Amino acid sequence: MNYQRIAAEEAFGTAEIFAEYRKLLDKGSIEGSTDPGFESLIGFYLRNPTPRITAVSERLLDLGERRLRDMDQTGIAKQLLLLTAPGVQVFDADRAEVLARSSNDELAEAIRKYPSRFAGLAAVAPQDPAAAAKELERGVQTLGLKGAVVNSHTRGEYLDDPKFWPIFEAAEHLHVPIYIHPTTPPASMIQPFLSRGLDSAIFGFAVDTALHVLRIVVAGVFDRFPKLQIVIGHLGEGLPYWLFRVDFMHARAVAANRYEGVKKLQRRPSDYLRENVYVTTSGMAWEPPILYAISVLGIDRVMYAMDYPYQFVPEEVRVTDELPIPDGAKKKLYQSTAERVFKL
Image (tube, rainbow, N blue to C red; front, top):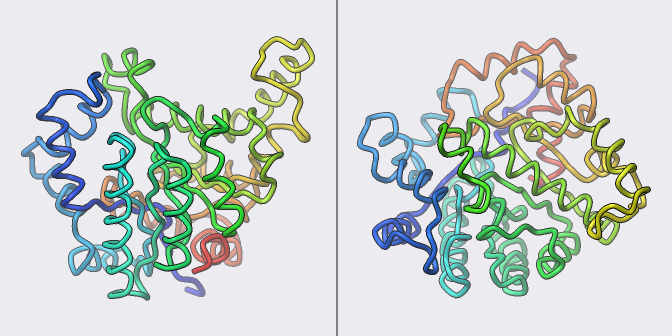
């Protein structure tokens, strides 16, 4: 091969945060209200004794030899590590800030130990946007991390609200991307998903994250921060298939002055999705949608990811290896785009 395989959306957790999750599960509420998505997601992974789920939970906590063996088994040269959902975004602001800082320190230590195998993104706590911006700055400038990860909504709030824009301002100033990783939909919208088991990776993750990104686009975030770059997984959470319709219907809504929160943008929504958003293949080892995403977004906007350890299926790497694209395109998909975007 004339390339290395870099996997750009690989999860980890910390024992400290998992202990705090267990406290919330035992309490049965977050800030006095129930969060069915948190109970469904974290309750499943921390309270399910089956061998597969136990193995996933154990792998999340391993930033050493077991993870490296798994990487070697699948031919992965480097992982970009992200704090797993829901990150620190379910805690009160003060506790979230402390946990973000300690998880970033733990991540940075693992990277120092294995600099050729790991890179990572800083967890931030949007509950306090100014503090989140400062932690992103510390993560990049002091710890050597490569951007930020935000696990979609924060207690039902999305980053399109201007109060969160100091985080975007910091990322643009630092020239680093923000990875918007999925979590379960908020309590206000989860019930139709939950009753049929559709709340997490099967569908709910994609719906919530795609909604989040479209809210950012329609709010004019990229007009305010034109150099800002967002990364999303799972081949764009369905958005590449909606480019034409989003453009058409957004233009109609603007012309009709139908919604107070929908104003004319400097460009079409699809332009921002092609020029300010990158997608990874995490969890989508399937040739047809990979080729489609490349065809509508461009090969320079698509990066490989495995979604380890949740979707640790070694034979799926072969799907990417055997894509009918030129070697130069395959090198971009596996290696050079990730190196450029995350400054690896």
